[in-house]
Each structure stands twice: as C-alpha cells, then as structure tokens.
Length: 465
Image 1: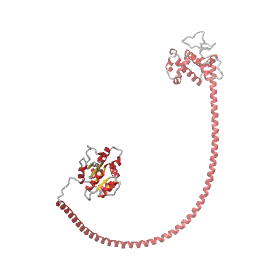
Image 2: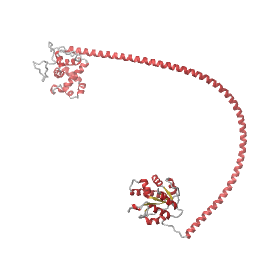
Image 3: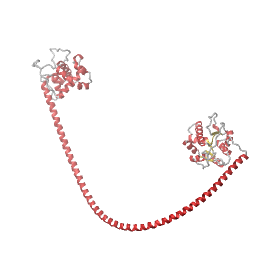
Image 4: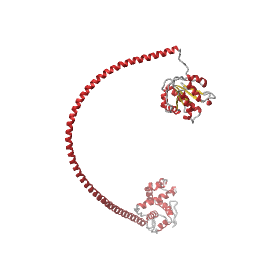
C-alpha cells in the first residue's frame, strides 16, 4: 500500500490514514494504550528518534524540538520519556513519524500495514511498527510480540539454568577429582608420617642410650674435676709465692732502672751541651767565612745567567724545594724532591705537553703547562724553569706566572742542550730536578748530578692540583 507523508494537519480523503482508528471502530471511544513490553517500547523510541531530525521544523512538537538537536546516541537515551509521551498524546505526530518509519522499513512495513507480517520477522520489530501504524489487529500483534518476548526471556532463563546446572555438574566432577587427588596425597603423607614416627622412635631409643652414657661420663668428669681443683689450688698457692718473689725482684729492678735513668739523663745533658757548642761553632764559622769572603745576598740565580742568552722574556724565580730520587713517573717522587731546600725544577716543555695534551695547539699547550707550573711554584716556593724549542718561538707571549721562568732555545740549538746548560750552571750539591721522558736528556743531566723524572710524574701532579 503506498504511503504518503502528511504535509499539514489535514489528510486527503482518497489516501488511507496511517495510524487512524481501525475500520468499524467508533472514533469517540478511545481505548487505553496497551502495556508495551520493554523491548517493544525501546524499539518504538529508537525508531522515532531516528526519523525525528528528518521532520520539518513546524511538524516537530515543541517539547521534542530540543531533543531533535541531540546526538543520535543521546537522542533515544535522554529523550525517551518525552518521545513516548508525545507519541501517546499526539496522533498526528505519530502519523508523521509512522509514514517515515514505514518508508524506511520497506516490505516489512507494508506487510505490517496489511496485517500479514511474515512469521520469520522479528516480533519486537513487528510490534513496534504495528504500534505506530495501528492497522487492524495491532493490539493482537503487540500481545503476540509480548508473548514472544516473554517466551524468549523464559527460554533464556531456562538456558541459563541449564548452563548453571552444567557448570555445577562440571565443578562437582572437578571437586571429586580434586578430592581423589587430595585423598591420595593424604594417604601418601600418612605413610610418610608413620615412617618418620618409626624413625623418631628409633632415634629416641638411641638418645636415651646416649643420655645414660653421657650421665656416666659426667659423673666421671665431676670426680676428675674435683681432683683437678685440688691440684689447681696447690698450683695457685705456688704461683702466689712465685709472684711475691717476682714482685720483690721487680722492685729491685725498678730501683736499678731509676739509677740508670739518672745516669743517662746526666750523660745526655753532657751530649746536648757538646752538640750545641758544635753547632754554634759551625754557625759562627759560616758567618765569619761569609764576612771574610765579602759575600753579599745575590739578586740572580745561576739559571738567570743562562736565561739572559736564551730567553726573550724576563723571568725571576724565588728559591724552591726538591729532593734526589730515582728516575720514575711516580708523582710522590716529585713531591719528595720538591720538598728539598732550594731546589730547581727544570721542565722539557714540549716533551711534557705533547705527551699529556697533544691534541691542543702549541699555543694552548704552552699556556696550559705554564699555568700549571705557576700553581706548583706558588704552592712550593721552588725555582721553576720551562724550556721550549726555539723553532716554535712566538713573540709577544703573555707574562709568565710569578716564580716561573720561560726559555726558548736559540736557532741551531735544541731545548735538550739548553736544559743541560742550565744543569751545568748550578753549583754542585744543589738539588736540580729535570722532568723529561727523553732518555738522552735524562742520561745527560744525571751525569751532571741532576735528578731526572718522567713526564707522567709532572702530568699526574698537575692533574691532582
């Protein structure tokens, strides 16, 4: 049956009115709305909510205009009460909704309107369409749908009961299997406990026998203890007598030691007087020799005279400290040598820098080494001289730190020769420490009385500063 969507509040006499009272019914007699099963009610609301936005604005009742603007998933959920009330109270609105719903339902909608719904159709869908279209016998369709829903619910309940019964049977079977396993475990445990009980009884018998033997040994030990106590008492009496004799001898020894200490103190006083007199004589002799030789305090050191011919930069260094040590890279050796009075530290510049930080430029190598030597000079007060090959001489270098003399070898002469010249210029007996990993330099300065050390000793000393 072709269905036309109504466009106003009047319908054409030639068109069948969808949702109108059934033929033969008295329009004045309005039967109450049937009680709808919950699935049918939800489906009616869902169908109405789906077509609601497609209705013209003037055909949407005022209470539903706000609901029509909701999102699809919220429209049926939040607007369900208002939609159900409007469908019940407004037949014209229900007719407009029914026309669109039946058009979307296609053949199923046409079959419901004709009262010949297919037997295989969803009873909930058929009841919802029948409620909206209200063809002849629509109440029976709704009642049949309710019975089908209830039958499905009953079938679901029965299926659930059957499933629960099966689960209980499965659990019971599982529990029986577990109980059998537990019973086997308990029987095994009982056998093990009985075996352990037999072992414990045997151990108890052995312990009782051991206890009797121990008690017998204890009695014998008690008798021996009494005997040994008597012997110990006699030994203690003998020891007391010997202790008294030792104390008497100790008193005599302490008296003799007092006399010896007095004699030693008197002898030490004589030795102290002799030593003081000897040192005083040496000191006065040194003063007299300095006066006789007319030696005035000097302003220049031996290395300064060598520096005048080899260095472009002035440098004066205070006296320092060093000590003779073996050729080694141990920084502790360097510290020992620097602790000697009036020591002179001579450093082979590029030999140290290229070994310690050769990745830098030559200018950065010189600056880093000279700065580190300045720290050593400030800490120890030693005379420090660093020598570089003149081939890399750079004019206009910044002034060296206080206490550090910077020298460059002349053209045609190496830094090694300048280092040996500095060592030869020092007086015999003054400690001179030369830092270089060049074996030829070390052998040369050692022949002149200097103390050669490896470059690693200075590098470790600088890293520690």
